[in-house]
Length: 481
Image 1: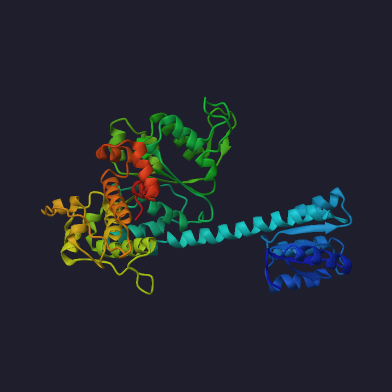
Image 2: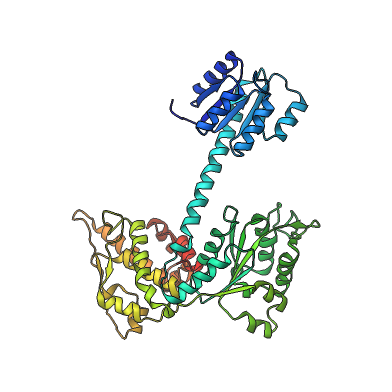
């Protein structure tokens, strides 16, 4: 029978009960199998996986609670709902203690039983999806998937591989755009905390009050806009990892509270009195010299030493130029897939930079590091009309640095013959807006000012042209490779 909405195993010694449950559940789209005693039920569980087990407490070969205990010894995840004619409180408590997820009495209410079965199976399927997602993310952020074979990056990855399994606090130091968040995620994914939450926060983007509320949470009424209780990121990340980017920007007051979390593993939410204990690994990042800030009195020395248990310096792109070509190939494939263009039969990019354009990329100093290179490649994918990306499609910053001043021509669009004038103008408008947004670091306000149009007008055009500014801004802000 097809699995339908889920697979259910019914273990009950009464044939009428088994048939009744099977009919009821199959009419709702579930795949149902039955077993008349505990032994055959356990055998069925050995042969395949189920989304739910309905277990009678009174079985002919052994007590149902013993069967439940054996199921839990073998499998702690599959939901087991006990169903019995002996619906005493003691039976319910005993079943829950041994790992039952629900408790029904005979005769049952069909509607209520079906509702609980649906809820239980939906929750179980969601848990499985989360596990698969976490495994996929772990693979995505595995060190082997970080592009970089140069000697500086090899040394960094060797150190990170040593550090990741430990519980130690890590301080990532590197220029903007060197991939600090990507490295933090890789550390988390290769640690014992990989199945728990990874929470990232840009400390420099929030004012002090909002940052403290974000980190430690608040109770209703703690301040004017606190209309309900809210968990802080430290509580959300319990038994997981929290990534504090731009750690140098937080105030001395917040630094003191952060120090307490690190030392005592506890904090008090804003407006609260009770202490909350947490076990969170901290990975912090900075693009400035924290030791210098300590000497200037702008960063607590005790917090500095707590954060700087292990410091990892990420090299700028100009110090690992041999990684530029593999990074270009990586980003070409990524954005060609996103834009569904210039792909070969295996789904890899067919694009390549012309030799003179590639030389410019190799010679450029890359002040924005890998993030800047990624933006250059994405721009090339969007604007390319041929598999060979010419010099003309490089940004002016790179051309100017190479001593080249190109007078931009109107782009030649690779358009279908039936394209209307409206289609051509819309595509041209989209490219112009994209180029200007990129120039102003995806700031809609600055872009609107440069065009000398109201912000609302620009936003309407962005929406009409389906330009995902939020995603591009997040990419620029995150420093991901």
